[in-house]
Image 1 (cartoon, rainbow, N blue to C red):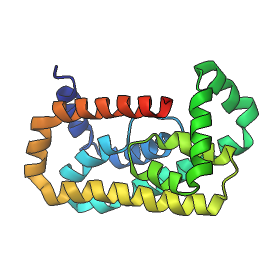
Image 2: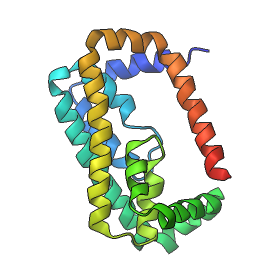
Image 3: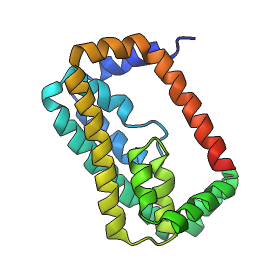
Image 4: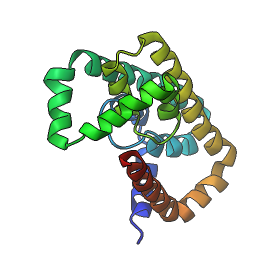
Length: 193
């Protein structure tokens, strides 16, 4: 079933828009708080379509993602009772929040690095870091390192791969999309148990 190919073509088209960088930075900011779509979906095509600006895109995405993470941290710390807790209860996410908090107690600051570099939803851990009152500056530093590594890796692969990478990506986008969906389901089940 080819549902990712048409989306990929649209994203490639949007990545060439004159305001694409602003959309990317906004997306990076809100993705660290609540947005479900990873920044890489827009960052990769932008790096392919404008390779000379790829490093600027990665830097901006990193900066705005960490700023969004700081807002997520604040929401977890200052607005837990009036905002976060009712949302968690409404969505029946109590067990997920307990899992995230136990990860913090087990692995400490490394959880932020793992969440900022991998496809694990970063927003869950930015808000959880505020809830468990993790030290703010180590949180920011580790998030900055993890997000930078991830976004600069994405643009490096796109710039080095160039047109050949774009051809391969467009050819296998549906397979890759389904692999990501499968991996997300496995990760969700893993976090459940």
